[in-house]
Amino acid sequence: MSTPFATIPDDGTPLRVVVVGAGGMGRAWLRTVEESAAVELAGIVDLDLDAARAAAAALGRPDLPVGAGTAALASDVGAQAVINVTVPAAHHPVTTEALAAGLPVLGEKPVASTVAQGLSLAAAAELHGQLFMVSQSRRYNRHLFEAKRLSSSLGRVGIVSAEFFKAPHFGGFRDAMDHPLLLDMAVHQFDMARFLLDADPVSVFCEEYNPAWSWYRGDAGSTAIFEMTGGERFVFNGSWCSPGQETSWNAAWRISGEHGTVLWDGDNSPVSSVASDTGYSEDPGQEIAGSLRDFVAAVRTGSTPMGRVHQNIMSLAMVEAAIQSAATGTRVSVDGLLEDSYRQAILAERDPAVLEVLKSWTSVRNALTGESVAL
Image (cartoon, rainbow, N blue to C red):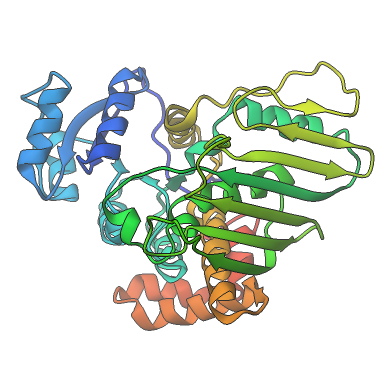
């Protein structure tokens, strides 16, 4: 059976990549790439060439090629793939350029600034027959995989909850965001809930608020209740301005089923009230290193990675639906949001070939969650 994206068979040499974005997160990715035997860093792209050169020097590779254009530098250095670590507003143009150049892309979350832009990128990936994978790095955690394995002994699962309480003083853009918790952090827990349940969102009711002592301009607290496709409920309760007794960055989790409960504190091994076998849970690797490993395996073999664009859009849809619910004070249908986003994507698309792919979809949800994607 043919794979839904082009592959680059393993010839015994590392996959040559360029990293786009030389900021703080870009530098973390650069270090991860340098430490991996599966990839070779061929260049750094950034509109600020001095920043790119400084990042190369920090790696001990001052002669590493740098450039301001993704496709141009990738062509010059013979790169085979792109890692997009730009700010969210640049995710759509950078990834679009790379896919059109015939390059698979591993991108930082979120998939794009909006669900509508995410749909455009999913269509572009189909059009060019290339993999676009979003790095939802907190999925790559062996304890999360163990929690999912243990939950299989609970019978029918009805409730999953995540408690997230931290008090980071970031400074910069997060302090000025309208929805700092939902937009910049909760997407991780929303995505992890989808993984734990093997389910997608149906609807959500959400409230946002900002405690009186908050140092954020926008709402730093929220509570959201999602209905999922299996009938389960996922409840997120969190704050980014709650000092003392803070939770893990992964949140603290409860998985409640008909026969018992699994608890995971986000940092250590999960525990279950139900005796289970001593089976082995897959080790997916740790955070962005695990994401990189998954990406390379997919490009080499055609396997479907976690975070492929079509599936990952559903995690961003949870964020947008939650924000819409908080703004309107109503329960929001995710299918309704997807259809609205689809209409926006159709109106905004400027590439006739990508537009043709979008118009070929008979159902947005089927296009995103179907077992296969027509090329």
